[in-house]
Amino acid sequence: MRAVVLERYGGPEVLTVREIPVPVPGPEEVLIRVHATAVNRADLAQREGRYPPPGKKPRYEVPGLEASGEVEAVGERVTLFQPGDRVMALLPQGGYAEYVAAHERLTMPIPPGMAWEAAGAVPEVFLTAFDALYNQGQARPGSSVLVHAGASGVGSAAIQLAHHGQMRVIATVGSQMKREAARAFGADVVVNYREEPFLPVVKRVTDHRGVDVILDFVGRDYLEANVDALAEDGTLVVIGTLSGGEGRLNLGTVLGRRLRIQGTALRSRPLERKMALVQQFLREGWPLLADGRVKPVIDRTYSLDQVADAHRYLASNQNIGKVVVTV
Image (tube, rainbow, N blue to C red; front, side, top):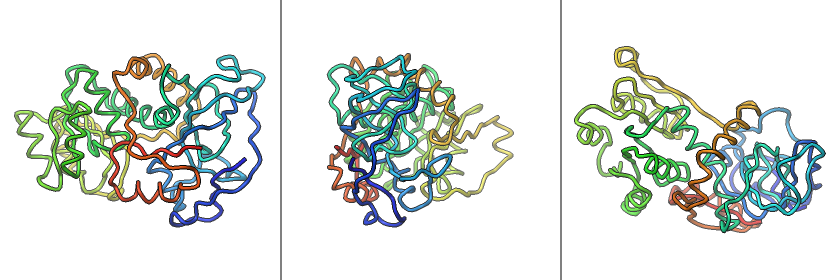
């Protein structure tokens, strides 16, 4: 099969398509003939050698944390799917290929009528956003939520989920076009961080109470302001550290206002915990996709042979929503 194999680390030019064997599904795995996958920030870090796949080093290092396609074959203990089923899956790696093996309990049916490209943009970002919002952040109807990078893949999913969860949503973005997009996703207040800092806006629109939950991808540069923007008993969920992983933190503020700082990552979790999250999402989040209340947002689509261009585009930070790769 054709796949993008990392034989060395570096810039987008190291992404080359080559022929490798089709994976053999294990007893509890399904073999998926991939139609679409998507590019995530984690893929860029993996390409640079900063984010290796969990566990034992694979024989072929193929990026790609999600995929959509048709079930080609199933392992002997698989009970949930059969050949021909349309599915989308959360992956530890391997999405940039014509075939990938996925555990059946990390695999979900594609909602009726959803295109391959849209389905390929669902698993990583919607599971990340859903988990960060409800499990890590413990947000509930009536909560106030600050979503940084509101026009990103995870940001666009989080805004939609929070809006339909009857929460008040504040988002930060980096352009007027992204501001309009975040409002369309359901954000009540949108801050262009290139024009004004977000902390005064949060204080103003919450009557100086602060927000209950913050979903942050930035890290160091936002740490102090994030802590100041939290309401009492609030939670800062750290999903990424684009500006760096170290920063100044006033522990007195954390103690006095009973704040919680929660880190989260899907890829490194034990299989059992990822399986539990997928099953929870199927019960509580998948129906929102099925009836169109929330939707994956796709910015651009590239072919597998154009994957280097897809990486360059995501790195430019121009995207609104997901960058998809068709296979």
